[in-house]
Image (cartoon, rainbow, N blue to C red; front, top):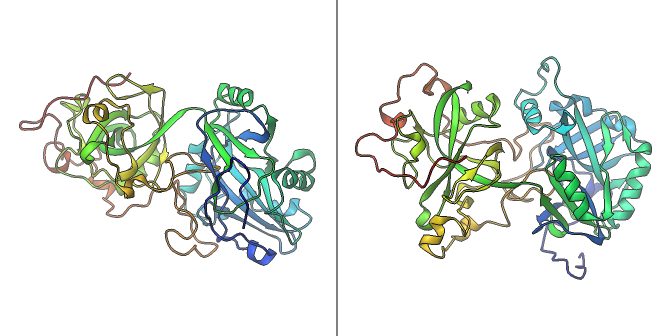
Length: 437
């Protein structure tokens, strides 16, 4: 059993592999996760690294058999979707298990949308001309040459990792860089460069597959939250989707409108939405949003969850400058709740949040230590290696509607049924404040 260091909370987690055979289980070993830190900090006990905005990946590379298996956080095979990384075993002298992040760089910054487009194509299909090449950013070593390194301290594992990749980089592979102790200054530089955030790791920490502990802590460089989609305003730019109407649950499980988002919503994300939304005849929000009056709106069941970044909350309780980040099918809609300082919550007093809504740990984030997703053993048995990925960043909801049913794609259903116009006679009036800036 791993002993907790002073000041480090260690909760129960999956069994820790002790032998090479137990570790070499492609598709069945979960990466170590991080807890959310309240804010930037500095400490000589910690190393601070960039929090990459990509797909978390465990790499099982064996130069003897000539194989590389890229495993997603939830155990799915990513190798067919990133063929340029399928030869990482050629860079190694002995079998190794690495932890890292698959990223695609656009203008020097990670582009998560580019990665989503890669996974949106069938495995083995021909890539379109000029895609952004994927890159593996490696930041930990679980084992190499038949030796399990999980119980060694992080500082020692990083030295071994550096010896595996002389010079810190190779074709398709780069070692994550960081600093010791000066976490606050490092965070300031990361935020200034527009990166996602920082992960702080104790230098003496073991590697605990599938565990979420304070050995690793993530600090986001921007505010983010998960919100429920309660309606869609048709448009002409993203597969017929113009704007998503967002909501959070409040007292009495009423769904409160908190803003609308179109920035960041691409055609791929829109097509995923069209395949999964479930239209309904009435508005799911407690009050019809003011900005929808006179517009054709498709009201939907509040089941689809998306992650959005935003600048701040307005005094009216709306998100200012929200930006669509990704779909979060690993976060239940019931966990998307108003913050305690929201006007609707303040007016209603303390709220009792059901245990099912509270969930295990905070919601948010992808990549290293992504919170809110199922841990090892949740969601059934791991998939067979080689199966098509269904990662935590890809929505998978039932009751799919046909794309041909979408208003704005030729069907005239704006004034009846699930496509009723907001503000029609008999509909409740009012709004929770002016539209966000």
